[in-house]
Image 1 (cartoon, one colour):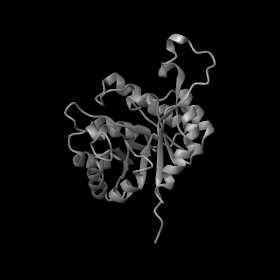
Image 2: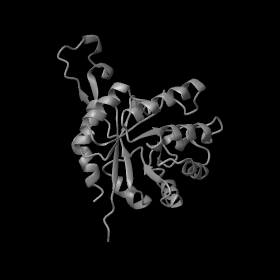
Image 3: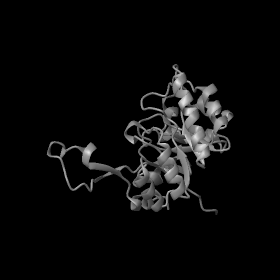
Image 4: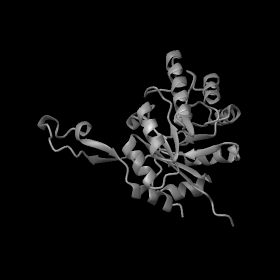
Length: 245
């Protein structure tokens, strides 16, 4: 019996966390800024530096701000420009997600971004979890040409949405990749694999580490913003994969 090939995607928030994720054996990086807001587009400098430093597959998120997934004309133009930067930088793909006011997929502009990104791969992110009808959206995203859907089964945590994820994966029938995310941890990834049949998994494994600053301004000594940095433990990335065996 052929061994299943699992893919581990790690969401990172800067160069340092990307470096740790790569060291831990991540297969793909969703490169973001502002993960606390769900991820926004990283700077050109971070994309360029990560592309030059790492051979792992890079998928920057194309999201001009936090908040909802209903975008203005100006915001969409920003997204188009960021897609071009990702192509020019040699990224393997992008991550997008656009909705209409009524909770349907913004088909016209999603298709335009997929076309602009070609031949890069396109992941439709957890805007999918806010859409009105996931099964209608599934067929639409297949038709548009998206490569995969990142989803937690329309629940804040994928552990609570596992039933819908399994149904989506069955319905997808290998026409598009269904990738569980949001709450994927070492202790539950094997359960998620067994219950959904999915082969790709997304996790941020977000942690914090104390700043190496020697001088600490007393008024801000308890400020996480000032003296705590985002961190990923490379060993946790390794353990996430090992948990699947």
